[in-house]
Amino acid sequence: NIKAGFGALTNHYRPIQMTLYSLLVHLFGVTPWPFHLLNFFVHGLAGVMLFFLLKRLFPIAELWSLGLACVLWVVHPIHVEDIAMANGTATPLHVFWMLLALLCFLKNRDAGQPKPWLWLVLSLASYGAALLSKESAIVLPALILALHLVLIKMEHIKPCGLKKMLMTHLPFW
Image (cartoon, rainbow, N blue to C red; front, side, top):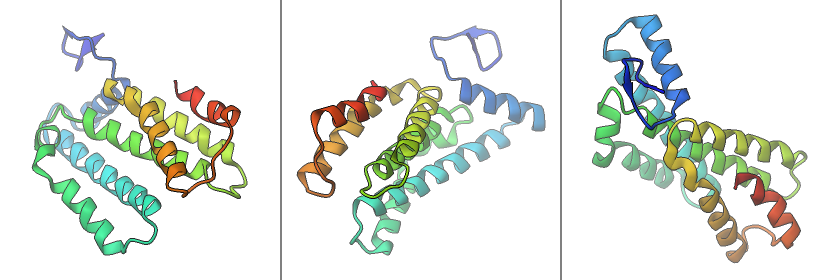
């Protein structure tokens, strides 16, 4: 377990981040600008995923208001440290994968979906990628469960029996 390939030991296991770093060093050498560009790009992708998630959760909201919310999230100063630091890729990367997992889970819950199992598998794969990007993605199963229960309470999706709930949520745990 070698930190950033430079010999310092760490307790982090982030193979997706390390693979991206290795690819950048192989393509561009040890220079900071590709790492910064990667952080901006991944953070922007996370903003796009947030837009699609908000659009899915608030279907009657106007697109400009959803877009404005996403732009405010993308440019919020709290993200400066993770985006501006060359080694801050893990945070936007795991946020992107978590948002994608939430989106795929919601697609899985759609009534009339021809292959709902495919969306569940994609959600699980995104969760796995989030875990391999940063350890704090471990909270995703609780977020998915909470989101599912809130949507049932708000009558956005049909309630399902305990067996179906367990079959849907247990793979995440």
